[in-house]
Amino acid sequence: MTQPTTMLGVCDGHDVLDGHGTRSATQWGPVRGVSPGAIVSEPPADGEQDGPGTWVLALDPVTWPVGARGLVVEPGTGRRWAVIKAEHRRHGVNPGIDWVRVEARTA
Image (cartoon, rainbow, N blue to C red; front, side, top):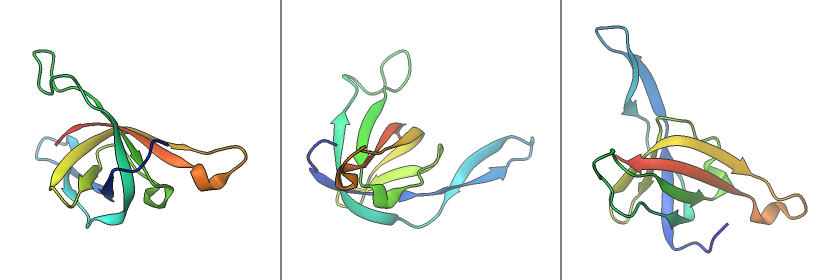
């Protein structure tokens, strides 16, 4: 994982069905697992003509599991990202450097 530069937490998405039967995460639980994390990369221009760019965030494993449609939040600034996908990256020798890689879009 990259060196932590901020505090990040996760809000789990709760899938609900709308009036048309479409599943969406429009409700989120409370922030959990607030711990040191980092912004690994950000899009050059979020909101370009092809749609919002993808951010890559590094979270502490205490936040695992992180599901698609959940939110990653930065409590200090109020920034939020909608999770596209997340992966628990385990180190083969030293579990102390495990991390969670999250791809997300600005929420």
